[in-house]
Length: 144
Picture 1: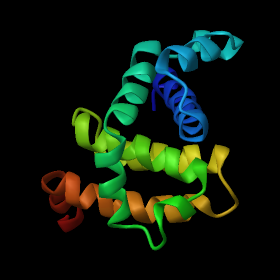
Picture 2: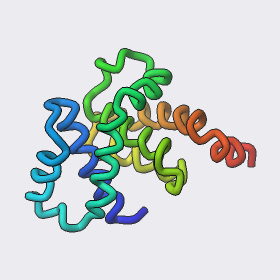
Picture 3: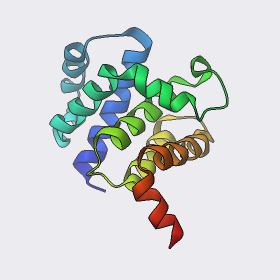
Picture 4: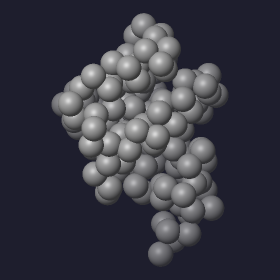
């Protein structure tokens, strides 16, 4: 995994998390992130594109995720919700990123920011999302 893109996803998840809690603008979120020293080591364009993609289509992404969660969306932890939104955005709008990379990144982000076993839950939901959004990519690999 590209360190710059992984770091961009870390910041994107944090920005999405903040947005879920207080609905700050992308401009405000980006400004806060730029103030952090670690921000210099990431792909800023990728980070902002992911955040804008999620925030711009949150209702559609939530509807897709809701089909595969076993609880109301409001009952998801904000971290799991942010990671699932990011993963759904990548699966849907960034076909250049292999679905396995998207799932792995979601799992790793949840391990970093989420609860003890949250990554297992996110992995299961992401696997189902990938099968529906990227079915043509997922099915052939699973048949091997």
